[in-house]
Length: 381
Image (cartoon, rainbow, N blue to C red; front, side, top):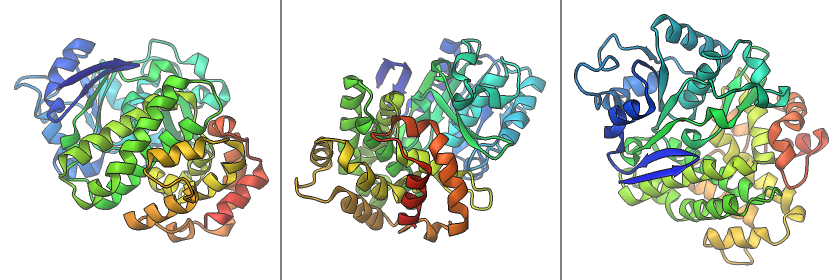
């Protein structure tokens, strides 16, 4: 069992979820609101996690406070519904069980549990970073996917009532504890394993390419890239392969540890595309689909970094990196383009306009213009 203190405290290994009661006591949460999603309730994974609490624990009863309606892309409406339950139940913290969506939703609830609304004022592009104080309610994150790394991230992505998918960013949003148990990912379907794994890939890649100066973050990102390159296809093909699942969860965590350095155009594109209400597209899948196009766009601006990336992925020096990623997507069974995901030409101008103002555009190797993003989205169709 590894206990890691880097940004926050992380319990990482098979069986780590058994430490939930200990972590609640360490953090000082006595009556948590559990935040999860309908799928994890239906497949029994949520109850497997909660069952690690001892009999008689106030959170380990059928009446224990649970918000289980997290949507695939967290919304402000869902945040407010969970907040109302948090207050009505007299909760003093949150336990998020699931992928990035429940964890991000729990973080947003933690802000409004201790700060006045509306939520939009805490968005990074609205000057919200400085408004999020250490009063944020404590969160424990138990990831059940290996992709977003939100359990060690300082951000929360929420679709606001305005329709914009914006980031709340603050060191105060870091969960007080991350309980990373690769065993919880054994039953992920292959498609979700692939999509979340490519989300981790995008985090590691974009962090390394970001022009900000942060060598420790780059070193972590490069190690994460190597783990994805070695293990993602194994995890998809053999869902219960212990070494593959362990390494993919580690790569996911490392990607989020590193992206404190900044992300880039892949995310600047996937955020506005992910806010299209009629589609409700998966974030990791979007990242995978637009990555080859962005890799080509950034090529003149990254020096020799692509050679390092190729080494980490086990590719030959002369390999076309964009084509290699597109080929990996194909082998993983991911969509060939945005059109296959239901995106239409009519949706692109609004998404391109929002991509320019997305906080990730600022940390791309070259800032994209609205025209750039419209062209990139069309190329990714």
